[in-house]
Image 1 (cartoon, rainbow, N blue to C red):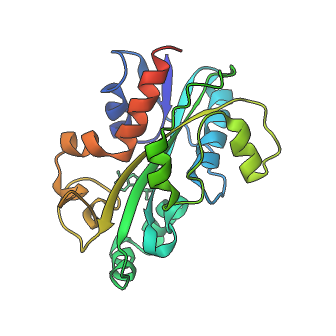
Image 2 (cartoon, helix red, strand yellow):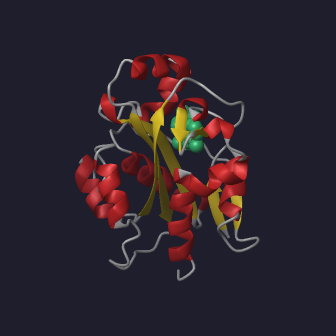
Length: 221
Ligand code: IMP
């Protein structure tokens, strides 16, 4: 049984849509969020800690909003910024910018205690190119070795496989009542995420894209 490590049951419901029936359950475990300027190192370290806690296969996700005109801020600091500044203030700052393009990005980290073959690489080139402008860890993917090198970590040998999802959009004045977090100020294809119903949002979301890649790879695992 795969365990999705989150305090949010909605994320597990989303994962269930991509994975075989009964193959995933929620693990309510609060892992340490290491401080890093990219999502990959946070997901990788979380997956290792959760695997050691659960002693079985785990999936951890880390997500954030990357505003291009702010050099990717708030990015990995999205939770902290949401709690402290709040999304209205993020909108106010972004409204001063010429370039209001932004992206939600999600990195999933999978760990089952075993190593991984070098290919297939789950991060496709299109995503890398698109993500390159949005954050410093745009090349994160594949095995954890590169990640560790990138963050200068003390080489934890437990392998983690990373999967990235990306959705482009732009920052707008808050609209819509649905969703959570930054949804009201993130517009994709003319609608904010808060204006979309859950199915529509899941179909285009960063988490959905990452889950899709993970599910395809996991089917052969
Ligand atoms: P987490 O990694 O899912 O905990 O998300 C980190 C931060 O990004 C939190 O502030 C979330 O509210 C925000 N966030 C992540 N995904 C979404 C999303 O789909 N919509 C809106 N905000 C999101």
